[in-house]
Image (cartoon, rainbow, N blue to C red; front, side, top):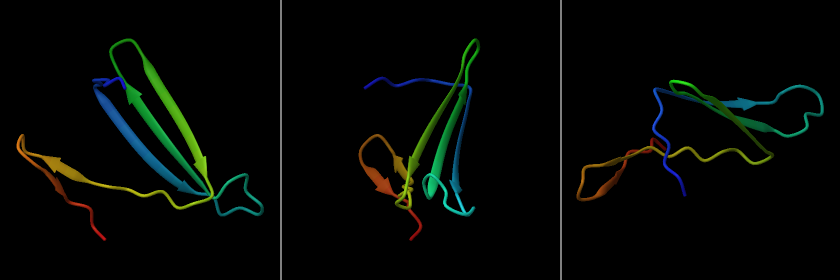
Length: 66
């Protein structure tokens, strides 16, 4: 697994509500760096699980709002 350090990171979850979509959800992950822009698109019929956590150097704390 590679860890990429970027200047800007954007995560967007789109629910596809049009008639007969190819999939129910699109997840777009966009990143910008000095000389490179990357876009990853994932699609799924299941609702994405979004987690938010904090690592303070000793333990990981789950901060997901349920």
